[in-house]
Length: 366
Figure (cartoon, rainbow, N blue to C red):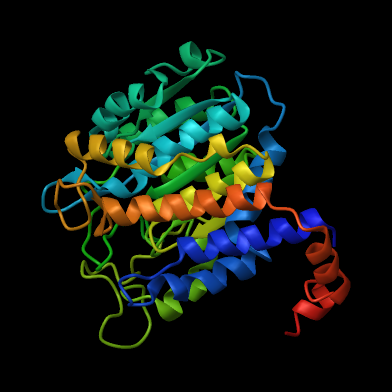
């Protein structure tokens, strides 16, 4: 192991721990994480970031990356802030890091946030992919319908078009094995969610690497760890009071789609921020990671655009966590990367490496 590898590993550990902080104290995120980590073989955000770097570094500006998001909540029938906030900041990061052309894939109701937040990020946004391709500081968006037939027609058109280098989904409503969509407590949401699953799986069939971020199990891509979710997460099946869903399909809330690269976190946006921070570390450019002020600005604009917190509130929050907590998470992630990029101690790195604790044969048995 080299000094760089040692630093990369421990920055990855820091980011994973930060994205899995559990201020609520109910433990769901910590239950998910062992499975996603076992699948990745190490810190999961860094694992995803390294693959994105491999796929995108040095690519021309007309290279496309699909960024999928969107989960509509009851009773207000508006999209939640988790997902759209992180997706917009991930679009910014992709442009900062690689100069490629992101394409946001969203429900119709997410469109106001996309249009209103783009100029806050200094970015141009287009409703046509070919117009956006190759233009500096630009991205595109495309809308997927809640109607399955319309959605499939839209998706088939995308599948027949220019092939992206990657597809990245965060907090996107995912159907279970019966084709039904559910919220966190098993209520059926099929009639109000955009039907994006076939784009994710369709791109995989074309050989496009598929990334996903989730915080419960009902999001696109989470089928990768389905056995673990069914064993430990409520409303997914199994024994006990809080077992299956409430709609009678008897197959629970777990999404059927399986990601190639999976990140789990307390809040999906926190998982996205950890991937962004890991990219900043890999590329040695802290500007790739947004700051706390940008986090607040984008989150507030999303709420002004009608996006709601998990509680239904239009006040700036994500999954019940206030804007102040959001800013603190971002600041800590940014600081841990920035410090690692600038810190140097020849004595301590050499001493730690000499002890060999982080060598796989030793660390596995610790």
